[in-house]
Image (cartoon, rainbow, N blue to C red; front, side, top):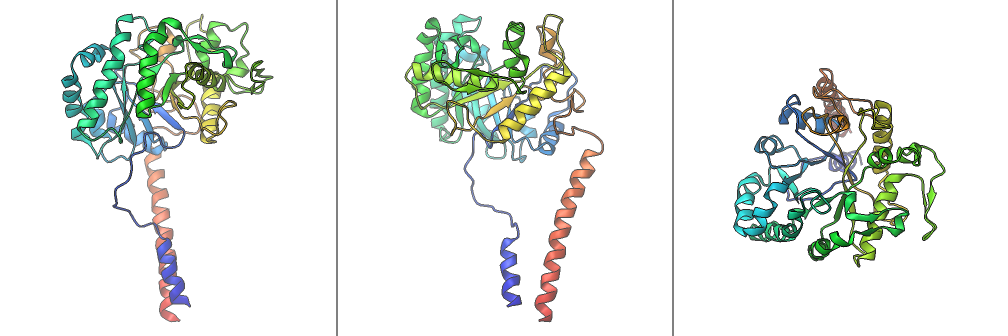
Length: 385
């Protein structure tokens, strides 16, 4: 009896698996944007250490920097890389350009670096450079054709993030539709993404909505704090936070355009911890509140009022405060972490502190030590009975 119990317990011990595993484009519901427009942030290898210690598995960058791709080798982290806006026209005009880019920035790094997604441009439609709108869909198609040549079309997700500027209105959520001038370019893009199974990614910022009209928007509604919320008069759905309302507005726009089953994911969302005098609500306390409540909400893996069975997935903006970003002061204060890797405010992470590495090592040692003790006890009992 004791010998049988001993062998049964052996089967429960976590032995490593060396079999192939399918790549998941987004594990769980929480990811982060790793922006690097700064001259004082940690090196990519330190960033990997920080991400792993914080148990953040999904990471998105805005280029395909080789120092980052090298640092992520063997990390087990899911990485989304980007083709920046300035390359969109070139990729649209030359399919061979996408082949060369994939051959240089993707193929050599697989599978050690888990590249699970590629973004083609960022906030192109509805943006200031209208000359990029028409070539965007062809650039996306050419990159997809390149992925097919490498047999990666089922392993790497392809998408392009949109800003709220693509919508004509977003209140109430059910009334949201795409702008007519945007829809000319959006429709062929959505047709293609529906064909290949890509989600619709939107950059959803309650912070930006709030600072645009602080007199009429309840900051508690924007921060996930207790508030009366709103009721959509067309659907009778109740919203107690703006984040969910923004996502459902995107769903409404897709449904109005005929894309009822396309998933909406959030490519960027965050709250600035500091800003100019004109940027109401930019403070450490509000940033901490928003990101703490958002993290809690995403880890619950729940849907929105309109799509309750479809868990929300979002990339937080951003990993670090980036001191070289242009624009208003808030642009340089979205980070969960300061430039030296310390936490900017406490939402449950520790940061790159001298004491963090020993704690992680100690925890790992305790787990292995406990498993060894348990196994030794059962071996002893098996031998003496």
